[in-house]
Length: 262
Image (cartoon, rainbow, N blue to C red; front, side, top):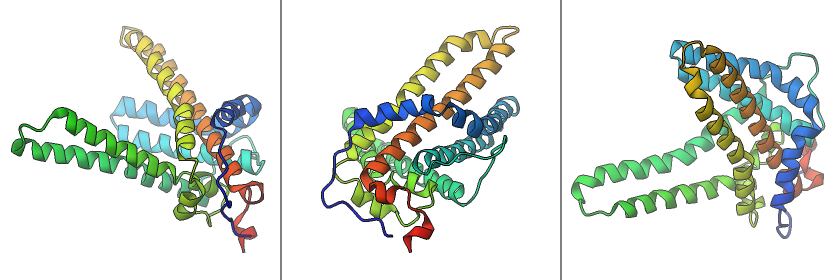
């Protein structure tokens, strides 16, 4: 059954949805532990090795892969009621590969325009010495804001991809999110920003001890906490997008599988 756009956009209750997203961590502690512990171990080992052996890029990619696999499980747990089987869950199949590539593509879509404006400002500087710095900053912020809004219109592809509803692509997501763009963007910010602030604050408080003699224990524990925080952050963000997807697409299409779309 094809996914159809609603005749008139319903307004997503952002506050209620973000509260539900945070609540999913407390409602599904078993899912968080079972689906996350093995991937957390992978992410921890990757980040620890990158700090020890200066292979930071590889460590970041492995961490991103682990978060991708966990996000897919969280989406499927909310939208399809699935639970990972077995003690160790390290699946990385078709949905995870697509999800990972989507993450790279949309991240590049956000960064590329900003980098382009920055490079333009650097190139134009010698020929426009009177160009106000505020004008350059305003142009950069405008491009970033426009890009974030545009990318937000595409974010329904994340939960759709996670549950195998590949019929919902960028074009369909763009149509379906009309009227809810700022609500989705605001919810995504509220889902991620508090965790980022907490992680940065914790890092600032602990890093001085980590560099002191005998501070290796503090550094090891800090890294472990930061990995758990990153998984909690992705769980809340995935939950918010899942609930938004469920609301916007509708109960009839929210859990549709590829086999049901024929």
